[in-house]
Length: 407
Image 1 (tube, rainbow, N blue to C red):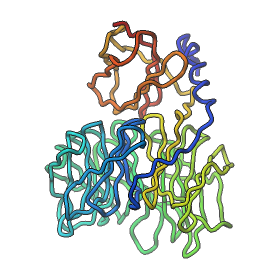
Image 2: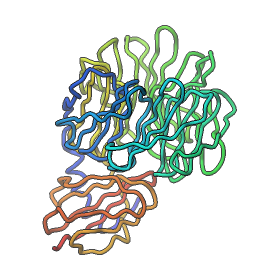
Image 3: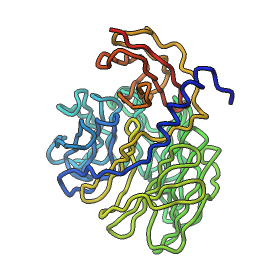
Image 4: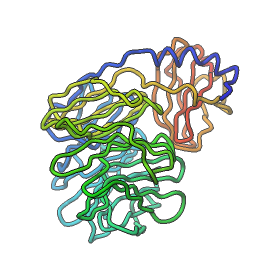
């Protein structure tokens, strides 16, 4: 790809970011709850969920401290997702009914909506404050267009039970797990645009997707286990949206199970794996992997916030990779149409999708990280006068531009 003159000026900053060696920092919550589901709005603001309990934990300083947020006594949390600093959703089970709890003030208060009776729910994905999807295990994904007040069933061809979820592009929703039958075969269900979810089966009996990460609608990576009661582990890749998968490498000898994957680009990333009550994080480079971190509690799931990667697990365990994630500079394009420039505070960004926003100074240091939805304004009023790089990452790729702050 031919880079513009602007990108040639930006490249040294990106290479500076990529060259920093990552460190994993323990930022565990002060309670021994089992954690797997979480949602991080940026590098500092995040929420983690105590599985099956009526509370979540919130940090505003990157995990240096945590505050407990009570959802509602007598309910058990199933899944959580925040799409901005204030707006978030928690799927809860009260025993008799399943409800969607919505907050518009960062968890200080909650609004309740009831999901259709007669199904068992395990995962949700919201693309914005109005549009959301919840998976049931009885061949149906439910869709809301008004923030959970009403739900429309989108039947599938077969049973499915989701372990992981993705939102890539404006209209593509992907859930991965197993097909829900006693054959236990790996399953990818996805919806592109308007319509029902289509199921794509992969693998033999007693196999399942433990965790997935799609970089776009076609390119995705997964950790896959096969066998019972002893598991073989597979690290696989798809280039056609989950229709078929290629094996990158396997592990059929050790006694651990892959639990999740996060890729920073098309060749590098991280895999969590569990051995009994302990875990390690493997650093992936192509078809090889090396030990990057050892945990005394089992780690279950990766979550990204801004340019920081978080891993959650048993015993209240939370660790983070406390340096900016690598960005593959070959996919960076010039960001056009930002205004006003120069600006004294507010900046309009031409985004069409929910996007991760990073602001870097001219030394390559990240000074601001957030998530914006289309139409939202980025505030730079807290920054000193000078020139900054604005980086936008969403399902369409990574774009960057320069802006001058002049108060």
